[in-house]
Amino acid sequence: MAATNAISGARVLLLGGSGLLSGAARETFLAAGCEVTVLSRGARPLPPHPLLRALRADRRDAASLAAALSGERFDLTADFLAYDAADVERLLAVPGFAPGRLVMISTGQVYLVTRDQRPPFAEAAADAPLIPEPEKNTRDWHNWIYGMGKRAAEGALAAGAGARGIPALALRLPVVQGEADAENSKRLWAWLQRMGDGGPVLLPDGGAQPVRFVYAGDAALALLRLAGPGAWPKSPALNLAQPGETSLLEFLELAAGYGGLKPRFVPVGGADLLAAGLDGACAPYWGRWCSRPDPAAALALGFAARGPREYLPSVVRAHLERPPAVPHEGYARRADELALAARLGF
Image (cartoon, rainbow, N blue to C red):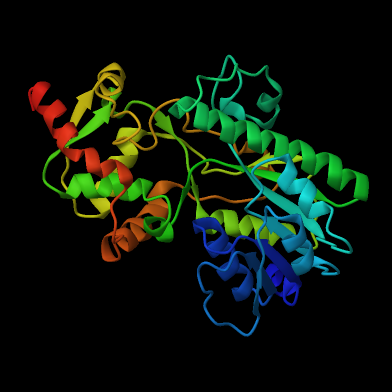
C-alpha cells in the first residue's frame, strides 16, 4: 500500500494501449491512482476512466508524434511500440517532450540473434557475436529482424536518453502470458483449442524443451515500481521473467489440468514437423525463437514474478470463458497435423 500511495497522482505515458502488456499496465497504473495517458492510433476505444486520457498519433510518423506530444511532461513513459532505432530517435526528437523515467519494453530475442547460445541468458549475454542474416522471408529471418530491431532500439535508447540525462531502461521480457492474450497473440489458445477438440496434439520432441515466460500482471507491477521514488537500476537493460523454468510438456499439462482438459499428446520429432511445414503453425513456444532470459538480477533488486502454478489458473479460465472469435492462424492446418499424427501411428 505504501508503494501505491507513493506514486498516486504520478503522470504516466503509455505508448501503445491495446496490447496484452500495455493493457495490464494501464489498469495497474490506474488502480494505483496515476494519471495515465495512452498514445495509440486509436484503433480500439479505451474504457472510460476519470484518470485516463487518450492521444491519437502514428508512432512511425514524426509530425504526428510531435503534434501529440510536444510540450508534454510525464513522470514515467513506458514504450511498448519501439521496434527499431528510428522509433526511439523519433520519440526523443519531439520538441519539449519530457518523458521522465523512460522504460522501453524489449525482448529476450536480443539474445537469440547471437552465436553459441547458452540459455538462460543473463543480461551480458546480449554482447555475444551475432549470427548472420538468415535467408529472407523465412520464419528465421522474420524473427531475426525482430531481434535485431530491438537491439538497435536499445542502442538508440541508451545513446539518446544518456545524452539528455534521462533515466532509461530496456526491460527484456520473454513470451508474456495473460488473461487477455486470447485477444492478442493467441499462442496459449493455439494449444488449448487443440487440447479441447478431441484430436491428437502434436508435441515437438515430446515437449522436452525448457520454457520460461512472464505474467503480464508481474511486468505491469515492475513498471509501477519503476515509476516510484526508489533507486533506478544501474544497468541499461534488465530481464524480467518467472523465477524457474519448466519443460514445454510440464507447462501444457498444467494448463490442461487447470482447464479440465485431457489432451492426447503425440511426440513428434522436430525434423518431422519441419518436413511437413508445420513447425510454425502448430507449436507455439517451441524452437530456437522462444527466449529464456534469466531474471536473477531483477529478483535481487526486489522485483517479483510468479510461476505458472500461480498465474495459469486465471489465465486458462479467461481463455476458456472468453475464447477468441477467430482461431490462432495455425489452426487452419489442423487437418495436416492429424494426418501427420496418423502417419506416426496415432
